[in-house]
Image 1 (cartoon, rainbow, N blue to C red):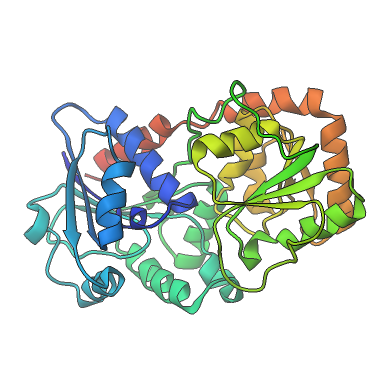
Image 2: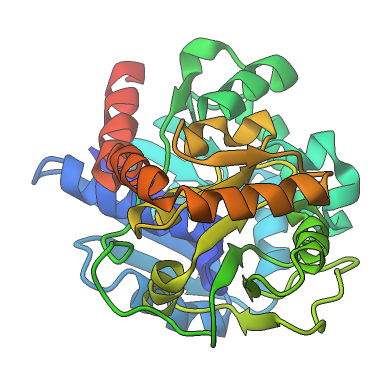
Length: 355
């Protein structure tokens, strides 16, 4: 089997989607037979031409990167024009699997994609105009795919109900947890007990409720905020006791998890919510939003709180810290269920069945 795998989103600093691409690709490498070939491709910028090989270093894949100025506009034009077919650049393929930034045309073979969530359709106010435009077009194209992977059963049901895709073509492939996120290792020190939250700074991530709960707790914890710069109205993060941590690398993020008293994840809507499971794997109690999109990530190992209720969050953070001896073992057991090889095996099995 010859698999064309779109890695375009790795052109920029990876967030959740980029991590899913890198992780699922690593899992697929473990799952395929020796005679199978994985061709990773991307029309990309000079930054991506440098970054993508670094992120994929060590994986036995064929890399085909096309350097283009204004790569985003080229990707959009290619998708919407519907030509030339991807085979012109890669040769014949048995599977074309694409992600979020484009939907390349093809002549033959299985067509496959991954949908992380339908936030742009349900909550247009939470995304930029560019994000909405890209995703709305991608969702329309997904209806033509032979296989559609989702990272939670919640998202799978949403895809079937909202996009009208037959459930037989939708396959649940929850994300894995990198080995970096483990109990043993260095612990970060923020100068006292701290609650950690990990999220891109954007409205959907709902950091305002944490800032308010931090104020209500009157100095019991510091609040560490780790995440890439996002967009839109931001909560006031310059208050006393709040530490801006930027976008840490995996090793530093693992140390931040391990050093935290509690990890908080107040998002209003997610495709899955991988920081919840990463924190559990690192041996930390977790409080997560009670929105049902986070049920699978949280399992029965996290405390839940209403994303609109700062007092509920303040109480849950204190409770999680006090119940850490109970919650940590439950979290570790829950986190063991999530591995990248399982994602690769799910993809491969779905493609073989569709073929």
